[in-house]
View 1: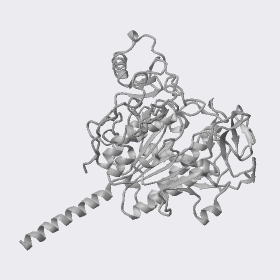
View 2 (view 1 turned 180 degrees about the horizontal axis):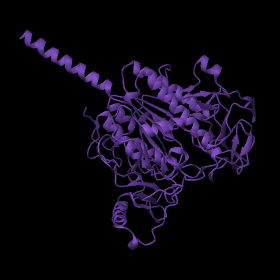
View 3 (view 1 turned 60 degrees about the horizontal axis):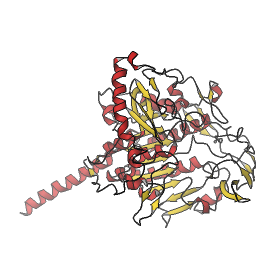
View 4 (view 1 turned 180 degrees about the vertical axis):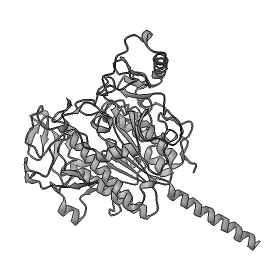
Length: 543
């Protein structure tokens, strides 16, 4: 009996060891979710036009073409999706990414058009929380699969500690009116009884929106950092960080420093990690270094630290900004404004990611996804015309995934696909009765499957956009032939009469029209269900 017990114990021990080894082999996952960047801003998409500073619009001037040697490499050695969609504007796209669902479920129809919700106290609140409508978020799914989870950057979502993330670095944080470290704010107040916005650095009234600076001299708040005794803590939070913080502190650098530290800590713990990096880069921001407050001429995209690609690596010029109260001198250490420089800085940060993965020896066991939430401000953001609003870049780099595809992929994908992709990689089963609108990309990436999904869809308040391989119906109800991309990625021919269309176009149009009613609930089911969502089955770990 004792001998049998030893055999059973030995088998049990080996099983536990194998389970631990398999858990360690789960690939790390990094999702870099950029802000307001159309596919056309990346040279890899080969558009004949891109955006021009200071306020956006179209240009063919190579001076304003982003330089992206790292994105080019990742896209060509990995894959990039030619027809990837987000929503038309920030919040709905972030809801889609976080939940893997469309607005007919989560009710985030637009930036300021969100379903109401009756909370447990019987009080009506003006935003239906995503963690209430969709409790199986990307953070919860990764955690269920055994991942350490980190969220950094922009949130635009309340209750950041309710989405399954262990730690976070938010720019700005959730309590930034009280942040004592930065006066780079645009604060809403009243002047002579009327609403006014004041630049607190200069005291000057401006035409803008309330904003807590996230680029230079940023507002930063940490969540559950190991060095802190509190769940949330403002940064800088140490004598060293307080001494170095100031005009030369660039928010995207702060985010990435904390991310890379997290990655290294979790690697030392032999724990797979999931990083959700919602960078601000690409989004407009008040340029506190500039004295131009004219709405028509001021710079939409503040400059970044200068980076240079040479001999296969990036070098960065240390910023040297001096001055105070609106009178600043960058001493040639900050770029001019423009989204092209934001995209270039993203390229630099992706290089930093890859270099860190190589340093840790885990490049071949990491999946890196780069995409954006919606189109570029001044061109696509908020547009329901053709696919200007939702057409985004999407790059997937995973050298250890044994992908069967490489380079440009003429298939359809949207940001709702990221959640089920994470679930499949993490070995987590989402309940069959829990509706997901996304579809895992893993089968397409790793098999001989030639298509990913039949259609992609998005929403803009009561308007809907949907497309298939050959047909697009935009938010204005116009139908387009999208079988081939035009040079500028947007000037698709209108299909005025489907009777003269191809067999494929007629078939796809009929399919798209049959799908739309399922999601068209803005008028009839705008708010949270009165009786709640019912019992939700738990996630299951399948491997």
